Amino acid sequence: MNDLLNQNDVALLVKTFYSHAAADPLLSPHFEGIDWEHHYPRMIAFWAFILLEQPGFQGNVFDAHANLPIDARHFKQWLLHFHNTVDVLFTGEKAELAKQRADSIATIFQHKIAFSRGEGLNQN
Image (tube, rainbow, N blue to C red; front, top):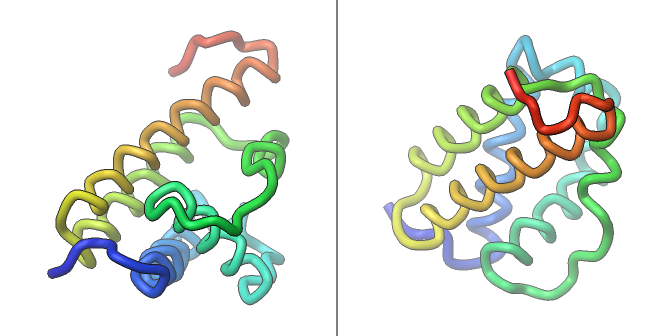
């Protein structure tokens, strides 16, 4: 197995991961109606930006998720699929960085969503 080295690797990660996440019974309702061909380029650009420092991503990732009815269970499942996908496809420094960044993103999103709902930083 190789490490995540380029945009094609990131595209493989993103498309494989989301195929699993979108098929998960807990997560699938949140993916209904997604235009994947439109959405994939943005997600690939995002992950290429944070993993490979490639320019090209613009926007606020959190705002698109802020009002979703998701909680700690969803983030746990999302991370399970993400980590599994990385581990099956890649090994190396960037692969480990991808999992660390996903963990950080999930933690930050969870706290921001809870705070916006008036739940503060208490998580179940």
